[in-house]
Image (tube, rainbow over all chains, first blue to last red; front, side, top):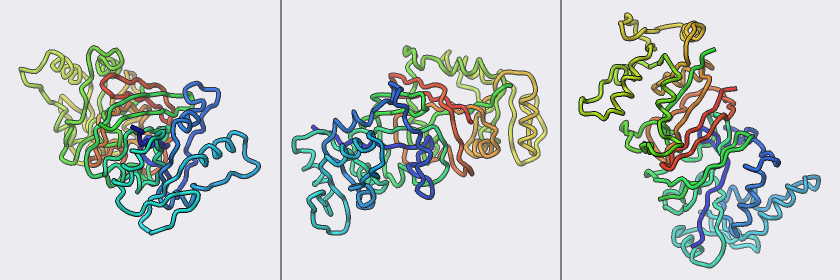
Length: 187
Length: 187
């Protein structure tokens, strides 16, 4: 069955943003480094669907890079925007041609999507949607890019999770940049 | 110069104990696994001094395993008890023949100890002493054994740290047990 994959960057002390939304602490991968050359390209090619919270979708769901952006960035965003998109929100919202809105019965709705044939699904975030998914036991795989910094404050990745989650380590890749890619399956 | 090394086990979400002091989530290393066979033996052989907070020292500083404990455990504790011990506390306490008490001027006292010849120094904990050391910029090396679990509550490793700490990744070792040993130097 297709998997739901949490994939994001986190500081060593577990923050996904600084206290004012900063992401300046994210080390850029070294393209010449086989460890993390273009893991995101590989990740994108394995998924065909993205789950967003409403705030994250409004910020990033239809983001278009500047026309002056690098070929790499344009290709990345084109890849992201080629996926099917679902937006989870408490506010009833009609579907658009770009996204399907899910406003209730999250567990059942997600199970129905998983039961359709397709590639894996990227759980994009934000933090509150991730917490909801963890508490409902809906995340199959945790992929974290651990960046070499103690951020000490900001938005924590794992807040308000209710019960302990056992994990099985699948894969570790470190890179010259100091970023470590970790992949775990939920037990 | 000798280094001050933080070395402890942490859950993927950054806790060092469960809400009731639980450490049952710590996966035991597989002795047959070259990745983590006996890294603690190697670590102990590289240090000659241990720094404790008062509570940690009272709990563990003179701990003696049961006479029925394994040869491995007896050897481990004999190794720990062969080191010089310093206890950091706000309560004036006379030195014993087993430990030296440091009750003020932490930064200066630690610098004086580092200036003496010797092997590296293990910052044992607990959490509040670790926070003090991070905030004073006294930790040279962070060695974390990241265990494959989201503990979701308990005592966080990195609480009340005041400013961002940049790190340089030195070393990553993963093991069949799912534990990942990470080593960073503070920048």
